[in-house]
Length: 474
Image (cartoon, rainbow, N blue to C red; front, side, top):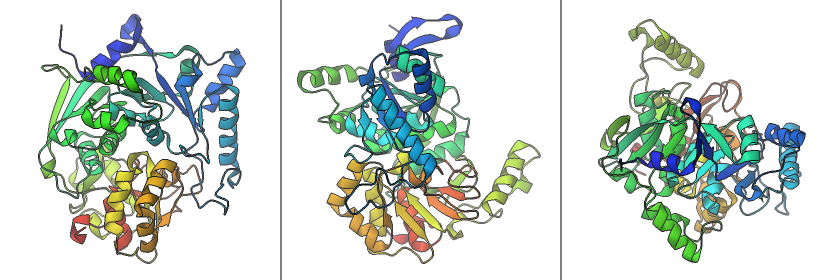
């Protein structure tokens, strides 16, 4: 038998039928719906008179539009959403999941949070499954050895009705991470460095699998960060083979298999790793010892540099799209060629998102914030990725560290990752952000976003400007 990659094994296990033109009908095991992308799909179901084929394989979550500010004195925030559009979106989702019997993470419940955080936390995300969601960062779930990708509204309706999708297989790409990384270089830094190296479309059309000694030593949170960010390199699929780290994370989760089923599941999951000698269409080896803390300077994630490196000079580039893009990005961001990011003042710091809102991310940021104070004039917020993460952080006393340092301690939600709620930047404001995108207006019209790790964002909040976290001795 020909040696297969992890992606090829996942694909083959879910093909219902081969179709003309190289496509296949792919069975979908899991579907997560949120308030922003799902309404059209539910409308199509109603208009066609269809019912969900398997309601139990879907999970409803409100995250993009939910407010994250402190709850009322009685601990309840549901029904107090001030933004009319956000309130309407959440109400529509709740009506839809009720009418179609979709399991729902209640807004004030213990499992509320961001789709790509609560899926893994609940055990809804499992190795060997196909997982879709109307959100491009569904790549996150590939960290468990799942074939996970974002889909459009019409495709969501298809999954609801048929539990399958027409798909064309991707090419394969392996990125091996080797070497010894600096203690203050995190998965976010590695992901940004990869994207800067290969470009915003560098992995387009490829399923990216991460391997190597660095990946094997990573926690599930770091693996999720790597896979989450691969959409910013053009890949719809990021993957890590399931191993002992994966199994330890999942065992005992509410929706994970139990007893004999757990034993059988693990035995199957252990067969998913790429076979020795499996061929990839592209391969890249990266020595992480060469990676410093990263900061995005422009308006796409690939416009990223080490924090101590000078910004590019468009004048030195040949005439063409790259030169024009650099000129436009520098102008929008209010930066000058040749300067380093370590001196750029900020007005906001945001620690959270589906990229960096997990307990490990909060611990890293708290390690920098401990015993220090947020600089005057900086609004710094910490937004856990889920209610469970928030509770775990409070049990460890991380909330106290953040509050004493001057950070706002928030409820779970997408918050300032995307300007679809009441956390957003005003024109000209500048944010040190742990989110995944720095597009123009992503955090608010005219807002300026710099992507970085949680430790780097905490350092920026403390210093009042972007800073090399290594210089703080954290």
